[in-house]
Amino acid sequence: MPENPLSAEHTTDSAAIVRESMDYDVVIVGGGPAGLAAAIRLKQRDPDISVCVLEKGSEIGAHILSGAVLDTGALDELLPDWKDRGAPLDTPVTDDRFCFFTRKAVLRLPHILLPPMMHNKGCLVGSLSNLCKWLGGQAEALGVEIYPGFPAHDLLLEDGVVKGVITGDQGVAKDGHHKDNYVPGMALRGRYTLFAEGARGSLSKQLCARFGLQDGREPQKFGIGIKELWELAPGAHKPGLVLHGMGWPLDDETGGGSFVYHWGANFCSVGLVVHLNYQNPYLDPFLEMQRFKTHPAMAAMLEGGKRIGYGARAITEGGFQSVPKLAFPGGALIGCAAGFVNLPRIKGSHNAMRTGMLAADSVAAALKAGRSGDVLDAYEAAYAASPVARELRLVRNAKPLWSRFGTLLALPLIGLDLWLNQLFGISPFGTLGHGKPDFATLRKARDSRPIAYPKPDGRLTFDRLSSVFVSNTNHVEDQPVHVVLADRVIPLTVNLPEYDEPAQRYCPAGVYEVIQEETGPRFQINAQNCVHCKTCDIKDPSQNITWVTPEGGGGPNYVNL
Image 1: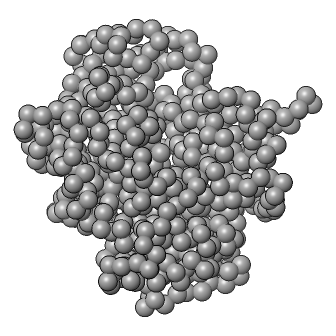
Image 2: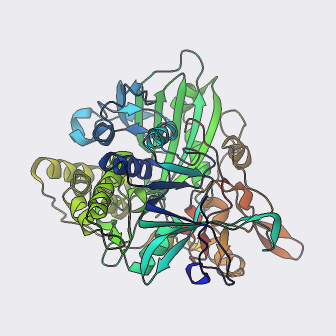
Image 3: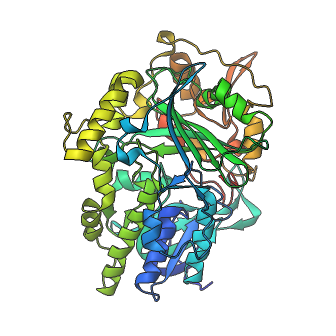
């Protein structure tokens, strides 16, 4: 790699560190669908544009988690011959069901009641992780340089302009000293930098604060999606079955829903999404997911099968009202770093890809005109006129209605709003706001009822540690903890007495524990368990936790998820 050491003013270190530097036309942070679509589109626009993609996972796809039922519209635009190129999508939706679960029954809602946008006909079921691996290969074939295992840890800023990023140092011990294998992070400099970190990206969060990107917008809203991959028993598999459910095990005041997708060779993706504006601090999203599988219909489907994968990830749910300003000096947010999930459709990958392509078109035009480091106003305009914005505007009131009225009352109101929007482009509700950010919605523990969850049986339901094991999560143990507490006493002096420290429940990987000892409670962080879902950064009621990137390559290694 070429040597071009940076001066100390270009680093974020307290002491000057000589860092190797590499220059590109475009640096892309994140090897998910948005980042890879942007990289491919840039090379399609001009093969001479130099493009680098940084991915914090050990390989492309290692940290990608989604349902996934894929609307292929954006992929059709990006690579029209994707089928001939061997994209790993070969299970069409054959049986599309929308259901309401009670404790013992499943009520199937007639398709005629659902707006056309809610139908999954023409979509494909598969693994977004596998699709991203394939997209990575397509990008590399065009000359894109991809560096897995290199997390972007810091912003590279000069005179208020984003000039690239600095990757994380490697070989730093937990106490901060440099181990024998210490290697300082590199500076990746770009004329433009695109941030495709996914939901609650650590650098995207900094960019929103620094440039006021969320100013004047509604607060971003989130859910946590918990997913398992099962290999079903012979005869239980129905390729192309897609089931989206609402209701049990969640109560009426808690938003969310379940999904079941049959695809591939006897694979079944089963999961639960819990909206992170839930109010009961005793609610445990992981255990709600385990409880969902005890429903008679689910237990019968999974009987004789084997769980072979597990993962969890935050999901952006704010939609149209919460999309931040996308462009800033020197770069832009794309994909779920900005939040383009269509909540009623339970889809976002197509919008992530399309925004990556829109940003790439704007960057390519700017580079052709000889510009660099300016604000990509053309991207903002392209988004505003795009199918992404039109789609999100149609469904803009689904989340606020759900939050205000609860599941049972909101369902018909959402249905009415979607029909009127889709048929006539009008809404009787106008554009509703979201209200409080998710961290501010918890009731106090004294005003809440504890929830009794069944113990895992190791056959149908499981505990956290065995789940983390099948996520293939691994971190170098002697490294700085990457979930940083602003104040180490808050978990025990504020969160525990006020909310019974909800971190020990909202984390789906057992990262946070309150351990009772003779001298009193102790708050313990098991950072090596972290699956990078970012829920702690979102839901901590004191906003005391900041998630930062760990040493490169750490975290889950998802297979077929």
